[in-house]
Length: 99
Image 1 (cartoon, helix red, strand yellow):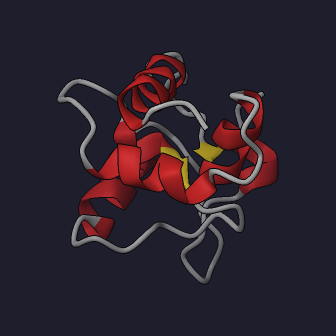
Image 2 (tube, helix red, strand yellow):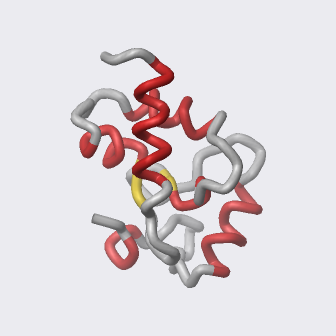
């Protein structure tokens, strides 16, 4: 795989395009970038993403919100954007998946 800095930059470029009210999974980002086995690397990129990116719009494939201490804030931001959640707290991916 390309060097980490270049890969992270491509992740950020893609995440910056996610429209309000839409979400994408870590694995989906990896596949779009031509690195289908790099979902964890996408996660690492998101842990250190620059300010201003819509980081809350990147979730796990099953719609659950990744751990990391910001779960409640992420959910609040997504709800503010109109993203629907299931009764068990996961994003309804089929209703708001981007691409």
